[in-house]
Amino acid sequence: MSEDRVRRPSRPDRGHPAQRRDAPARPLPPPDPARRVALDVLRAVRSRDAYANLILPDLLRERRITGRDAALATELAYGTSRAAGLLDAIIAACLDRPLSKVDPTVLDCLRLGAYQLMRTRIPPHAAVTSTVDFVREDAGSHVTGFANAVMRTIAEKDEAAWLDQLAPDPEKDPIGNFALRTAHPRWIARSFAEALGDKGEELKAALEADDTRPEVHLIARPGEITADELAAMTGGEVSPYSPYGVRLPPGTGDLADAEPIKQKLAAVQDEGSQLCAIAATKVPLAGTDERWLDLCAGPGGKAALLGSLAGIVGAHVDAVEKAPHRARLVEHAVGGLPVTVHVADGRESGLNPGYDRILVDAPCSGLGALRRRPEARWRRQPSDVADLTKLQGQLLTAALELVRPGGVVVYVVCSPHLAETEGVLGETARRAKAEVLDARPFFEGVPMLGDGPYVQLWPHRHGTDAMFCAVLRRPEAG
Image 1 (cartoon, rainbow, N blue to C red):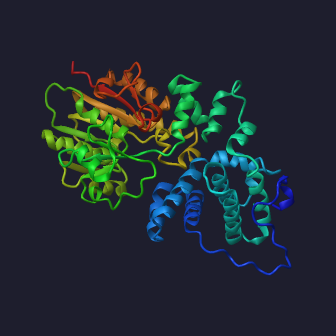
Image 2 (image 1 turned 45 degrees about the horizontal axis):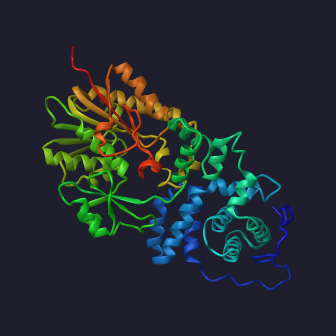
Image 3 (image 1 turned 45 degrees about the vertical axis):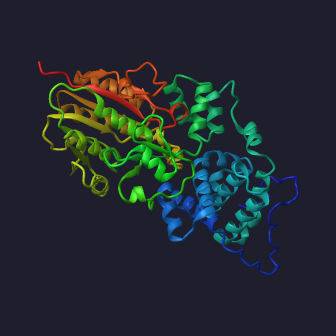
C-alpha cells in the first residue's frame, strides 16, 4: 500500500520522513531490545498461534534482558496483545482500504506503535521513530513512508478521542460501546452481560477489570509453608480469601527462579482456582473419604493442591490427563504427594468407580482468565463454545458415574459463559438425577456470591479470575 493511500495528518511530521530514493542509505539505528522482544512476541502470536505468557519469559532469558527493559517488554507485549482489536480499529480509521490489505509484518509494528501512543507514557516521537525503524528493518524502506504517515495520524488524538469517534452510541448499543472501550470482542462482552444480568455499570466494571494487568497470585503448599511465611519471603500480601494464597503486584517479574518456587514450597495459581479446589475438599460426606479424583488434571496446579490436602487427611488422589506432555507436567507438580497420574481420556478413563470426591476442572473457553492470557480474547470464536459444552457435559457425566452414591462432584470452569456454566450443569444434573448443592457455604468469607446455588467469581468483585463452581451429589442407591 502506498503512502498516498493514507489519510494525511494536518500536523507536522513527528517521526521520520519518507526517505528519498536518491538519498544515501541511512544506517540502521542501534538495537532496541525491549521493543524488539515485544515485537517478536506479537509476531509469534500472530504467525504461530503462540501464547504470549509462554514465549515472553523464554525470550527475556535467552536475550538476557532484565530490569527496566524486561518490564517495558512485558508491558508492550502483553498490553498490545490485549488491546489488539481496539488498536486495529484505530489503525483502520487511518486507512482508505481494509486492514486486511496491510502487510502482516507492518501491521505488527503499527500495533506496537499504536499501543505506545494510546496506553503508555512513552513520548510520541519515540513511539513513531521506533515503529518506523522496525518497519524499515523488517519490511523494507519502501513502506517506511506509509508507516510514518499512519503513526502521525494516530498520534493526532489520544485514546479517549479515538474512542469518542469510533465507539458505538452508548444509548443504542451499550454492550458494543463498552466492548470497544475495554478492548473486548463484542460477543465476549455480551456473554459477560448475560452472566451478570447487567448491561450498565457492573458490566462496565467487569470489562474494565478484565482489561487491566492482573496481580500475580501464589499458593503456599499446605503442610509445607504458611501464607504468612510465603508473603514474608516474596514481599507479597496474604490473600483475602484463600488460606494458602499470596498476592503480588501486577508486573512482578518471572518467578521461575524464586526460591519458594524452586523448592516446591509454592506455585503460581490464581486465587479463584485455589478456592474452587479447596471447596471440593470441604463438602461434608457420610461414609468413606479416602479416594479423590482430579478428572482433568493438566497442568497440575489443582492436583497438587488436592494432593497436599489429601496427604494431611490420609486420602489419595488419582489425577487423569489425556495429553502425555501435560501428564508429565502433572507428575512434576505432584512429586512427593499421594497422587497417582493416569494418562487417559477423562470420558473413558478405565478407572474403578467408587470415588468419594471428584473434581472436574473441565476444558473451557477460558473467558474468565483473559487478563492472564492477553491474546486469547481475539483468538477465541463464538463457535468454539458449542464443541466445548459437549465435552464438558461428557466429562461431568463420566464423573457422576465414577463417584460413589452419596459422593460429590465439583464442576469448575474458568468462564462465566452461561452455556458452559448453568447450561451444562442443568442438563447433566437432570439426566443423572444428581442433587445440586449450594456451593456458597464452601467459599467461606468470600462476599458477593449472589443467590446460588452456583458460585461465580469475578475480577471486579473478588480480584480473581472469573471461575465458576458447582457442587453435585450423586443420589444414594435405591
